[in-house]
Each structure stands twice: as structure tokens, then as C-alpha cells.
Length: 259
Image 1 (cartoon, helix red, strand yellow):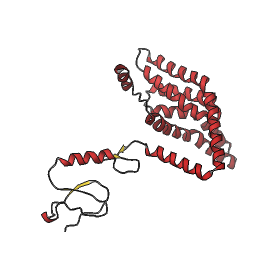
Image 2: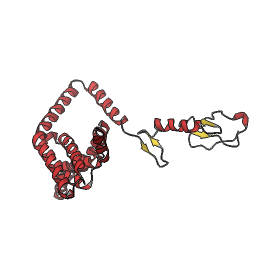
Image 3: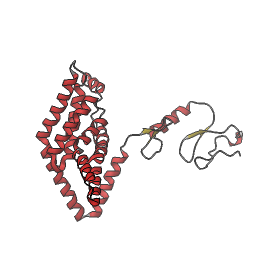
Image 4: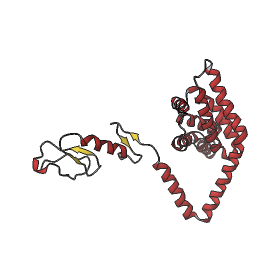
């Protein structure tokens, strides 16, 4: 079992909802916008202005929605180049065979093909042949088997959601808002320019705050907690001993004023 864990860690195969439902899905949305949505906008603009060149350009962008989504998913999963390029074929087949529910089929199939391709990448002397073959065969094979059922199921779910929205728009609006808010709150913390961990709302991460408190607990010298942003600041040296340890409330960004 430990050998399997070591192998997955070495190949950067992380089987978690965070990797697949947040990172991969978010990247797929960007790929969808950069192909299908922007292509539809360009095509509509060409139809309104009677410019055939814009209509053709929008059609080309729309036709590449499947490969764009698959490559975006592969990028989010940290695929090596050969796997990433092979996903172009996988995305096209999954989207074409998935029908109206093609994006969901692309998401599921591209994830499986990406992880299988990563597993065999650089494991043989003929990697340039093995990696694309495994990625394309697994992806296209899954597309032929399950893309159409996934697309049909996605279409049925979409129809059900539309019907429920018409029946109870207030309840469905609240439900969708809660789901979207929950998905947004699960995004990982990021680091700012100073190297500190920030939450999606640009506040300090809980782990960062706890680390600061633990680090400052063993240091000498007066410290107090800033009232505006919750970060620890060292008291200015010109404060006399009578005011040491007091919390001075002031807006964030203002310079300290001597007492």
C-alpha cells in the first residue's frame, strides 16, 4: 500500500474532491469560455453586422470547445506535455459523442485519461509512443462507452433544474446561490507578494494567523494585535512604558501617531 502511495505522490496524482471538483472544474470553465462562449459571441456579432469572416471565426472557436476544455483540465491536473497534447483528441471525441451534455463527459473522461497518461509518463524508453497511446486509447475508448449516456443524463438533469426553477424560482435561486457560495469558499488559500497565505476574500488564512501567534509567543518584546486586520504589529519604540501592551485603534494604512 505504501508503494502505491509513493507512486501516486511521485506522479502527482491526487485523488481528492479539491483537485477534481474545484481545480479541474474551474479550469474547464475557463477553457469553455475561451472557445464555445467567446466563439458564440463572435459569431453572433458577425451575424448582426453581416460580416462572414466573424461568423467563420466564431464557428472555428466553437468547434474547438472540446479540445479546449480537455487541455484546460490537463493543465489543472499538472499533466506533462505529451499527456496534455494528447488530450486534444480526447476532448474532441468526448464532446462530440456527449451531445448536449458534452462538457460533463469531457470533464469525467479527461480526468481519467489525464491520470492514466500521467501514470505511464516517462516510465519507458519509448515514452513518446506509450504516453500518447495510453492517453488517447483510454480517453477515446471511454468516450465511445460512456460519453453518450453521460450526455443524456446531463441533459435530463438540466431539464429537471429548469422545471424546478419555473415551479419555485425563489427556492431554486437560494439553493443555487448556496451551492455556488459553498464552492467558492472551498478554494485553496493563495500567497501574496510577501509570501503570506490569503483566503479567497483576501484575508489572512487561519493557519497563517495561528503560525504568527505561535511564532510571536516565544519572542521577547511588546506585541499587540492590530484592530483593523488582525495582524500582529510591534509597538513603536517611542511609546513610554505606561502605554506598553495597550491596543491602539487606528484605520489600516495610517502611520502611528506618538502619544
